[in-house]
Image (cartoon, rainbow over all chains, first blue to last red; front, side):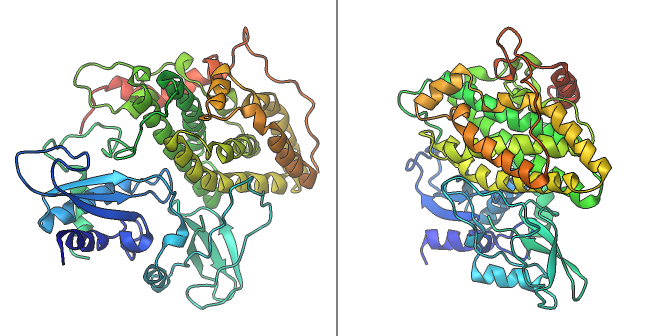
Length: 178
Length: 306
C-alpha cells in the first residue's frame, strides 16, 4: 500500500459527527485524498520534508455546522496515523447529492433506524413547484410498511425529513433526496 | 468508534492558540481551498458588491427567520423555520466570504490583531446603510401567515435567480447557486404548502393570510427589479438580471394564488427614496433595529475570545 492509499484509508474511516453510523466516505462528503511533496501543488515548502495530506470535503447542505468538526476529526485522525501535515480543503462543485451515499452507508442508515434516500431529482431548468402533501412514501425502517406519512420536510439536521409510520405508529427520520 | 467521540471538543481547541474568536467555531474560511480567482474582464469590486447583495438577502432573511425559533405554532414548524434559516445563513457565509476574497476592500477595517474573520466583519461591523438586501427581508415579523407569505415571495424569486446563476462565469457563484437551488426548492415548497393550507383553513387563517399578502405585496417588485450593478454583472455573464426572472416568478405566484383561491393584491410597489431602495443601501427603520440586536455582542466585545 502506498502513502496515498494509506492516508485515504485512514481518512475514509472518519465518521460523520451527526450521523456516526456513516463514515465520511460512505456519506459521500469525502471527495478526495491526495498526498503531495512540499513545494508541489501550491503547498508552501517548509523546513521539514514531510509530505502533506490534502483531504477534500464538501458540505451536504451549505449551512452544515458539522464542517468544522469534520475537518478537525480528519486532521486529528491523520495526525494520529503518522501524517503530521494535513490540509483540509472545501470543494463546492459539484454540489453534494444524496445519490453519493454508498450501498454500505444505506445499509448502515437502515440498521440505525433511519430511512435511506431514494434517487435525487435532477434538473437544469426551472424547478417545478410541489404543493402536494409528499413526494413519495419511504418504507418504515422498523416494520417495512409503506403506509408512512410525512410529518415535516425538516428535522433534527438539515439533511433529514421526519415521517411517521401508520402501521407501527413510530416516527422515523428519512435522509432527504437532494 | 475509537476516540472520535471525544475529539468533538478537542477539535475546538486545535492548534497552538487555544482561544477562539467568540462568534465561530473556527472553520475560519468557508472557501478554504476553493479557487477564488476572479474571471477575466470582471471588475473585482463590482463582483464583491454583487456578492454582498445576494449574501445580505440571505443573511437578513436568516436573522428574521431565526427570531421565530421557539415561537412557531408547533415543534415541526419551529424546526422547519430554523432549518431554512440555517440554509440561508450558509449561503450568506459563502457569499460574504466570496465578496471578501474578490475585493478585501469591501470588508470593514478592524483594529490590528482582530480575530474576526472577513465574513463576520461584514456581518457584524457594517451599518444599515452599507447593507444591500432587499427591503422585504428586513421588515419586522408578524404572525405565522406573515412569515409564510414573506418566505413564499422571497423563495420564489431567489429560486428563479439561483437557477440562472448556476451558469455564472464565476465558478464560486455557480457552485453556491447549484447547491442553493436544491435547498431553496424545499423552502419554496414549504411556504407554498402553508400558503395553501392557511388559505383553505378557517375564516381566521384565510383573513390573516390575505392581510399578510396585502401588507408584504408592495415589497415584492424590488425582488425582480435590477440595480445598475446587477445589470452590469449580468452583461458580463457573472450575475443575473432580476427582471429576467419576472415572468417565471409571476407564473409561480399566480399558480399558488390560483390553487389557494386568493386574488393578486392590487397594491403599488413601496416607493424608492430618491430613486434608492435596499440594493442602494436605503432601508426601512426595521433594519437598524434588527442589526442592533444581531450585532450588539460582536460590537461590545470586538476581540471576544473564550
